[in-house]
Image (tube, rainbow, N blue to C red; front, side, top):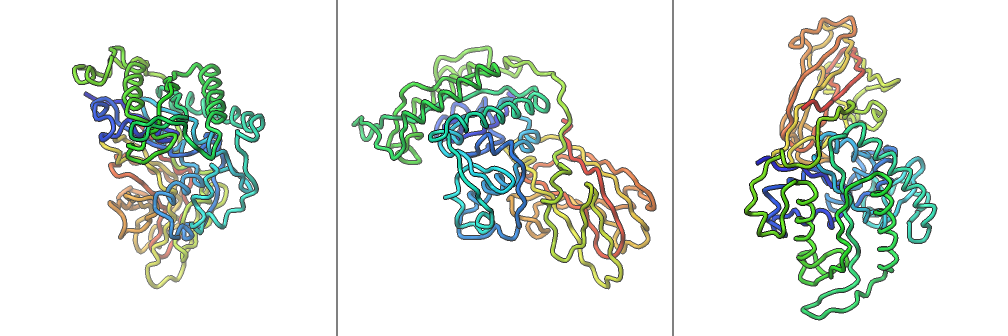
Length: 430
């Protein structure tokens, strides 16, 4: 049976139920292929922020660095299109709990305390913060505007993805070794739950979205894998989550986890009808070419969405490379897609090129690796093999399947020559 591909924007209240050490019964039915962790919906829709790749160093863990890079790259929409989930689960915990921070030209989720040991973060100019608990009306207005933009994006580019709002809440009671008591929190959990309820109610009613009601008074427990916390619940929460999700998306119904093991289903029983036409989305947005990374000796020039390089008199290879932002394109279990890479190229004189390599594709396990020594695979596109002649604009198009997690593409010039690239596109086709 083919599993339903699951995307998540939110927090552990949506993610943990799919872990095999929590609810193993979910594994035959659901495959989490994309997870936007602790990211405000406002930040998801904000403009990318330029940063120095070399400054992504520091004592902070790699997970925090990867999260901050996503906040700056604004790769959430890209990752959704690349992964093409059947269902998208959204919980509004990041907006309710963290709020947002303003930079000079954009917005990030206000987890600034988490990034203070990362050099790239410390170079940001943080202008201020906004959260829905102390400034509800102002925050809610901005949040609604960005929710509208997000729904418009999903309708245009992922119309066959079913959006489901996860109605979780902060636990106000805790069970510590069988003793139930009120949680002593530095935050007003009841007020946060009230704001969370307003967000859920608005999204569901305004856009007719499906809703998993998990607002029952689930208790926090000290027996949780991640310790005692208002969002780390007793096991009943996670089992209820999976049963309610299953009954939301499949025509056959389950009463409990035991009944799941007896069901034989296929995707024809998926309740959400597919077949809607989606607009094309370029995973290599030309508007963010200025965020691409190059080796310091390179002489690339970016102007009017055209990349140009001209090198003369080099007596040894320089290996000029302009690396795209990493695209989370595969490597999530067995969910692979076919993509089409295309671009226009002008090679002034093909004979000037000592090496006729003109474009590079590399896959990586991690988000912060660039070079050949760190790559899982490398593919070089060569002018002669592509039957390019030079002296004019020519179109290149190749099909590819990527089974590794991250892909970077790079205009490339090994040594001497004059080359231009424009209209660089990467699109999911199947």
